[in-house]
Image 1 (cartoon, one colour):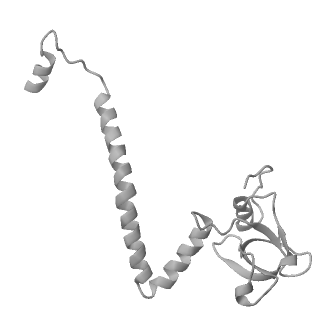
Image 2 (cartoon, one colour; image 1 turned 60 degrees about the vertical axis):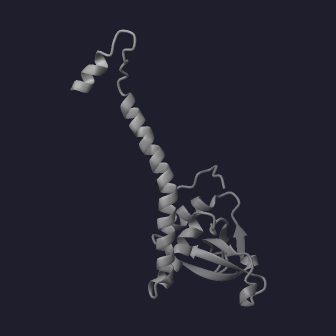
Image 3 (cartoon, helix red, strand yellow; image 1 turned 180 degrees about the vertical axis):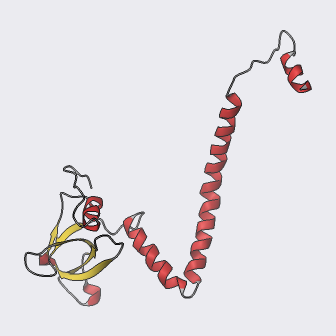
Length: 165
């Protein structure tokens, strides 16, 4: 109370002006700045530490790295599901929506084949096939996100007419 009285009665020439809400704005800006700096450094270190720990833990390593690779295939720098295709694996003129994950299956001694991942409807699982390249049709008019949404929804999702890749 004494401090407030001194501020209000500081004198005629040097009176302090009050700006309602200025303190709140300054606090919010400081919190955002500190949060931005600390989250980028501290959180990245913490995530890296936890990631390394899980990758070295026996039993968990296999599951963790498989799930991590699968999720990174959808997002981030390691996106793999970026080439939507129609693929015939069951019978002639029966097509499934899939994604090319490897252009060539030469590592498996299958020249002329591509590796295609086909998601299952209403699940986060799918099946990987080695398919002859002549049984694959690249979908240039549908984005990979739209193709995945259509496949996982069992074909009930609406496709945008003008999707971008």
